[in-house]
Every structure is written in C-alpha cells, then in structure tokens.
Image (cartoon, rainbow, N blue to C red):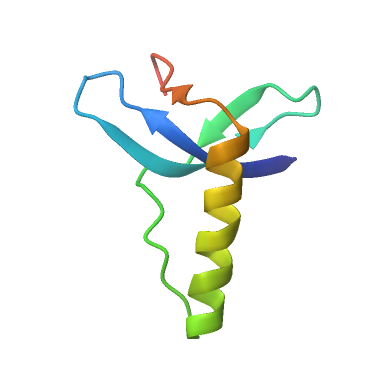
Length: 70
C-alpha cells in the first residue's frame, strides 16, 4: 500500500484540508486520514521534512475530491 499527501476538497462544501491518502495495489485511492494532517513532530527537522513533502505532493497532484461514503 502506498500513500501521499493530498489537498482534499470536502464533499460538504466546508473547504479544503491536507490529508494522507492511501492507495490499493492498483493505484486507486482506498482511504484517507479522517482528520487533516497536524504536521507535528518530535523535532523541528521532522516537521520541516513533513511540510516539504506535503508541499511537493500538493504541487504535483490534483485536488482530491472527498468521495461519498468515506
């Protein structure tokens, strides 16, 4: 199973958030974190690395529309 950070557009129209989206073996989104990513870490370096990765993922991938029933 793979994952990446995605900007998610909420189906209820309340806006957007950054979530981890997980994919099945065929590369199809299969789940995502219930809450947006808080970008916390044990060290400042951990937080910076997570933000850097999220920024790169957000620039590379389109907005992910939250599916019904998730």
